Amino acid sequence: MTEKEKALKCFDNVRETLKGIIEILRINFSPEDLYFKLTQDNIIVLYNNLVELILNENGIKEIKKRINNCEINFDISFNDTQ
Image 1 (cartoon, rainbow, N blue to C red):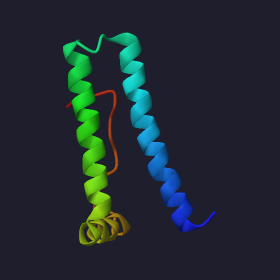
Image 2 (cartoon, one colour; image 1 turned 45 degrees about the vertical axis):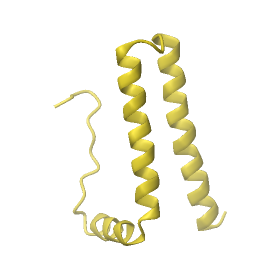
Image 3 (tube, rainbow, N blue to C red; image 1 turned 180 degrees about the vertical axis):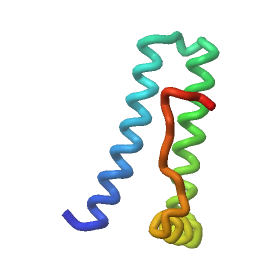
Image 4 (cartoon, rainbow, N blue to C red; image 1 turned 135 degrees about the vertical axis):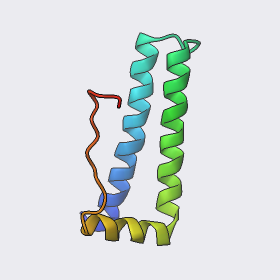
């Protein structure tokens, strides 16, 4: 698999994962539920930011540089909201 194919597959995986999260929400909450709407809004913003980031070549280069220099912290605690 080429790097381009890997990138496209990764992007598709992210998109499908976000759709899956929304489907899980639909199972547990009514689409009229405030928590459903807030979570859906956050997922949409996340997806739009991801697309914007991908389209910003200079920004993506800077992020790659910072990742390589260990300047970006990837730790996200899903157990603690603080």
